[in-house]
Length: 147
Image (tube, rainbow, N blue to C red; front, side):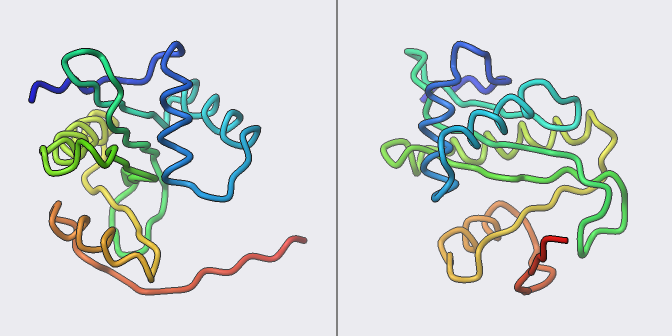
């Protein structure tokens, strides 16, 4: 199946939002839209969309540069903030293509490492990342407190 992967265009925001809703549950539309603007306009963030031969958006990967990532020794580190392939396209190597494009973007930004995360109870995501060549570094529960 021929797939094109490229940086999201403004006219693709509705499709991007649909995919984000599947990845980041519990976020309201306004937060999504604000964060999408950040990704769209920033130099240290991007979203890449996968489109099939008729132009239908079938997957996405959101990336950022982080100065520090647990388990990594270099800086900046390319970070896969989220990846999603529509269920009807799974098993067609689209996720692998998205990761390959993600790696190329990270290299173009001077990264020597790429990292990601998965929820502790999301074993499918953990298996996916391992299948893509990521190595587990830590298992933690993170906390925050408003000051």
